[in-house]
Image 1: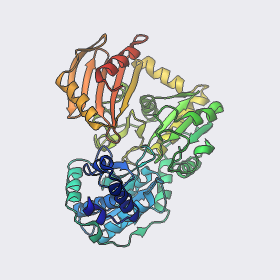
Image 2: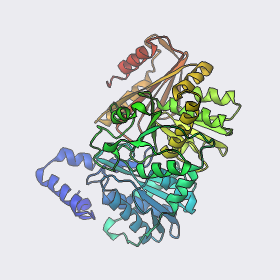
Image 3: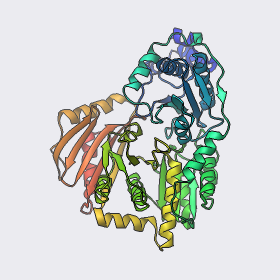
Image 4: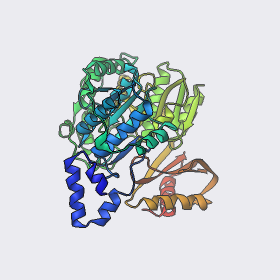
Length: 503
């Protein structure tokens, strides 16, 4: 502990840890020194605080040094950031450590959306990318997302190799530092042009309400909409400017209850309402005061692309609606189902043209951005809404069409936020050791385990999938029923909740 404090390059976190020692706060210190942050579904994330179990300059420099050792000198890395607490300093630290290790470090010029960084990797032809962001996590958090040369997020076995390299880093204060290069607007301009070209029709008559949810999406969304020829959306004023405290929402996640309240209030006269999460890689959509589920948005956009003439592989995850598989079969296009995370989805096949997952993530054009991208998805939502408006309809009419063809796929997510991570492990272990024969009246017809921490219970006309979150201290259960009887989903949710015992 004392060695860590002595090696911390930030006087603020040194003082913070020293004060905890002086106060004898052994519980807090035990938490902060319980081990290093590990790469999850999308890199590393944690609360901004001192110690190895936090996001701070020591942890960030170690991570950058580990990545540099993994890549080797002479390679090039582009680095971006959002507007969260610490992001600007962490971005500078990553660039300085990479440059000091003999790599070329290229910094995006300001706080920008994560999709711009993902696009930049292949646009610039670099060997890796690093984005400083905690995406939709609580305000106290920050994190790092790492991308490989293919423009997709770090995946196995590279994540293990990078973690091993981080563990081998010596003293942080001994790491050589160098000068990173600050890029101009060329990457951002190229990204805006690329996504603005995605809508294929001329339909542009649509009224849009939009919120960046205190994040970094507004500038890029407005530029992309203008370049694509759409009218400027009406913006939720209270959430327009980046604010790392996210003062108007309990959690800056469009999935959370109440997060869309201001947007729904603004959108009374709009044809469609759109929300970005803080780093603008996710999209939430609402029509007529009703927020669409991620599965509904995902299938709507897939259907729209197919109707526009796009052909190729569609992909979604094991926790998302099975309607996409039926849509792909009806159009005779390939389909893949992967584990959660876009690091898996975008590697579903070289012929991939579209991917989504139920947690509001959409890769509308993997050829442009090999990750989820809320901005390109927003453009296609606007186009589809304009096309339906020209027919005297809304997105809800289009969704009803799909349900008539493929059945009503009702989905629901149960989420359990805990402080004690052992509760999550215990719940998963119990399900694995003693899988239920039924959830209430719904019999379990098969049990599958596509990964160590993912359990799939097949039902007659549905399924239940249980997994820990890869980015937050949560256990999640994903429920799906096809053409359920009235009240069946409520009954299934109650039975799952009772079985997990975390409610």
